[in-house]
Amino acid sequence: MTTATTSDLAPAVASLLQDDLLAVADTKLVLGNWYTECVMNGRSLPDFATLLGMCTASFGQTRAIYRYLTNFGHDFGALERGRDAGAIRSMELLDEAPVGWEDFLAAVWLGELASWMLLSGFLHNPDRQLAGLAKKVGQESYFHLKYTDGWMRIIGEGAAERATFLRMVEKRLPFALRWFGPAEAADPLHTAGQRDMPIGKIREAFLREIGKAASLVGAPLPTARPASFETSWRPDARRHGPIPAGLWEVVRFKDQELAF
Amino acid sequence: MRTRAAPHSRIFAGDKDFAGVACPYCGSEDLTVQSLFGGSVSEVMFRCNGCKTCFNWVKWRGALPPTAHDSGD
Image (cartoon, rainbow over all chains, first blue to last red):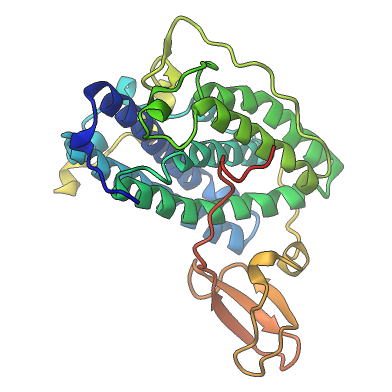
């Protein structure tokens, strides 16, 4: 593997790379908060341990990516504590709180898988620090997805639970697909050698992985509808508009004075 | 509504990630997953069906989830 640094990048490429990494980091921030909020909905002691483990790992991944972004001149404190709701770039999939265990599982499974798929595109990045970061996040995501696989198998044993889960996947999946952006022929990050493959190919791989879950739940997963994009689409944030006020209240850094 | 919890031993029977794990006391590979978590989040608790002893096993093997590269068409 060759070694490159962030200073070797053309400004436009560096900007796109930062956008994608911030979208992943902020999605992990929201995922971590989801786990924190939902931990008491676990059904057993192992569920609690799993959710708390996923929570701490997600916050750790968020901070590791924020730390990496300081290579581009970002201030770590500003990234973690100094941004308003409009600056948070989390996946729209996680904007709406879960309405039940099946919805929670559908959302976090799709969120974990989509964020990993996007980050896995940097596994062979010329910057060894970024490639290593992607690998480390992947090693943790492996267990997160293993846990969601187990929960899906359990849900697959009950007809009513399975039907609810499939309905929730159908509701959430378009938001996960939207995160990968409009299907465009060219991917500047891939062209610049920063992403291993075009984002459109990663999106296709994500959909294939969704389909494979049929063997876990015992039924075909809903077919993906084409993602729609409004004029408020923010390609740099991979989302429309700011995060909802209610979500911001959950994820915002609350005790800034205690952090120093 | 909450779904019922299923025993880990059944859900994770034959799991490829646990292939090759052996009891540190008697060496038997006839094991049951007692809990996905042992003394810490990074450990799995097994029960040996041979010598009936429980032991913790560190589950970290550095595996990655499927990537776009290895997700088959």
